[in-house]
Structure formats: structure tokens, C-alpha cells
Figure 1: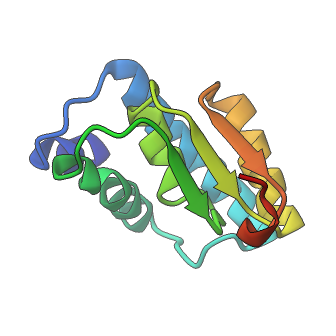
Figure 2: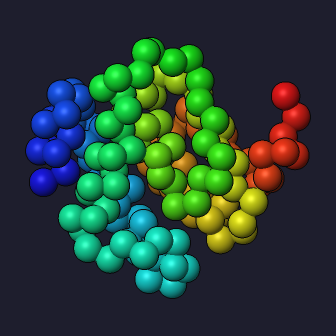
Length: 126
């Protein structure tokens, strides 16, 4: 279902990217059971959120880097970083449980293009 939604937007994904998007959804479901990262419980809701996260790629010019403020459960940054794996992403998340989820996801999904800061955006040096 997720692949179908994404392809309906005209976004081409590789097999590896699709696997990582599904793996992200699985990680979020597992962590959500104990950490309440998001209110989404159904697969369809997660898939829709993932697709919504990457939808801006249909109209954004090619970008060189991205900053996600208050990354929370990883939307939109993690799905975007999976698809735009050539662009560096910085994720800002001051809350410990969400920061831990993002760090775990980075490692599990092998996302070398993201950096996660356990800070508020005002605390990040430019």
C-alpha cells in the first residue's frame, strides 16, 4: 500500500528505499507501544504520514541540505532522508525519548546522511 501511495505522487523509489520506509514504520510501531511517540495506531495512518512526508519532493527544487525542527517521531525528516540520501539532514529534538528513537532509527536504517541534535533549535550554533 505504501509503495502504491508514493508512486501515485510520481516519486520513484528503489527497492532499498521502500524496504527502509517499511522498516521505519515497523520501528515506530514497536517504539510507540511503550513510548507513545505518535497517536497513529493503524498501518494505513503510518503509510499516509510517510507518503505525506515525501510529497514535497514533487514540487521542491533539488535541495542541498535540510533542518527538521522538533523532529519528534521522525516526520517528515526520516522518510525524506531515506529518499534524498544524497542530502545531509540535521534533526533537532530536545526530548530524550524522541531523541533516543531518532538515534536508534538512524542506526537501524543505516542513515548516514542524518545528524541528530538533542537541543532546541535556538541552542544550535550556526
